[in-house]
Image (cartoon, rainbow, N blue to C red; front, side, top):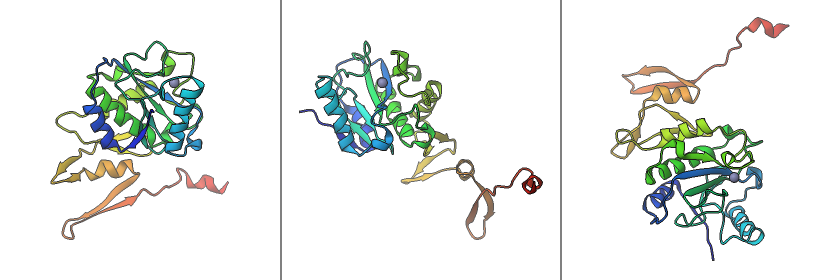
Length: 236
Ligand SMILES: [Zn+2]
């Protein structure tokens, strides 16, 4: 009986690095479920529901997708990656299919923390199978559909996934959620503590470094104050 399981991001990356594969992978194909939408999501039972639909209504042996991502970034390993999926006609033999539980025709990907989590998973897939970001494809390139949604942009998606790939000099990335902005704050590990440049991180969080009192060993960070561009117009 096919089974899906929820995993953490590190578990997922570890799985991708180690899973035995006999088929060649030449592309990663991104989908959205459209229905269920993010609002319909109820954890594992929603993922099971997709699998049941694929098995009972479509007659497939398992969930058509290999990986599904819930709206808040929950990760589910579905069909084993060692087996060809059933998610993109004519492209299943040599691909991995990843689906967001979302409707990105209407839902805004910038509000959805899942997008960046999915990109982390995709980056791990690119590394494992030695692919380039150009080998990330959207389902709509191959079918007369909008999948994975008109509000998701391929170039931007590829770019963000590329930023999340490990390079050997700087393997930690700080990613702002929701959304998928990668912050260039030079994160590095030091004795198990992640140290970052504060200024770019504060800027990304719409804060500013206000003062640095070296003798107290304190750095003050404050929220930026919103001031109207032209206060006089407020009175008219
Ligand atoms: Zn699709």
